[in-house]
Image 1 (cartoon, rainbow, N blue to C red):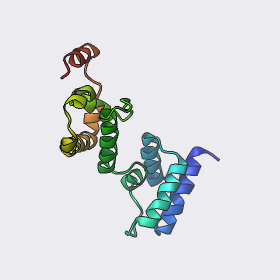
Image 2: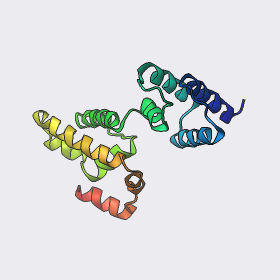
Image 3: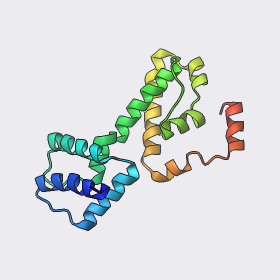
Length: 163
């Protein structure tokens, strides 16, 4: 069975439960959005189950609702990433795979500097500020495109002076 047919079956099943028939244009839109996000058919099936269990509305879930069911909201991601950063500050790994976290921890905050200056009683202020910055960057595609747009020579200079 082709990839698109598997997607059509997965989306068609939830659409039928919500009393909606998805035409080929709607299926294509969902398919393109999910492929752009890198989702698998299995993730869509799991998200469908989650939405059927937790969603109170009787209309077909939007692509954004599927994305939130799979990835979590920006707020959820910000909370998770703030804990990953705090673990790094406390001496654990410093590898940040999330592009927004990587950007924030190389341009706005530095792990080594936080290790020296962040005291436990003030961590909640850092977490608050980090989450606000994370959400701000995550809410716009343009800001994510700008991440990494600093020329390597300038990035090296920034890292040397610790800005």
